[in-house]
Image (cartoon, rainbow, N blue to C red; front, side, top):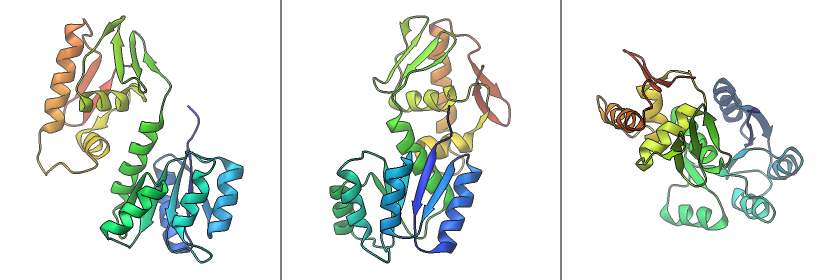
Length: 221
């Protein structure tokens, strides 16, 4: 799978550098534009996978950038703003933004929001041996039989199947699937994993889901 490219449109260089570092550490390629006009040019020329857009740009408002992008692009746009009002949020979503984050925000929340947008836009089927997952239809089959999953079980399996063999900690799964909203000490992840394991076992998928004690979970690649 090719590396996903994120365009950061932000005029504050300190904030832009922090975003670049966090996103690069998470495995993304990052481009930066320091103005609305430069951002529109980079978006057209580089075709990023996702755009992080600051509202307070020096040349014109970030809302105008959203409108211009939406004339010929469906790229996911997450707006970064200090304007924490219902009216502003409604305006941004109405213009075509996919999500927004209120400044200041935690890097883990940003990464979770980014991953949610990218996961929702993934359309190709994912296959690991006899296990196939179709994100667009939200359909999972094992050896040709449908695996009936709850929405969260589907999202967890979609996360694991993208990197077979990689062990995801409970914290990583909670952050990605629930955007970090699970309370401390919650066993919600373990409950969902137990249900997912049982459903795989019902279709003779013994051993597909691996538990690494004290660490987390993985699909056997």
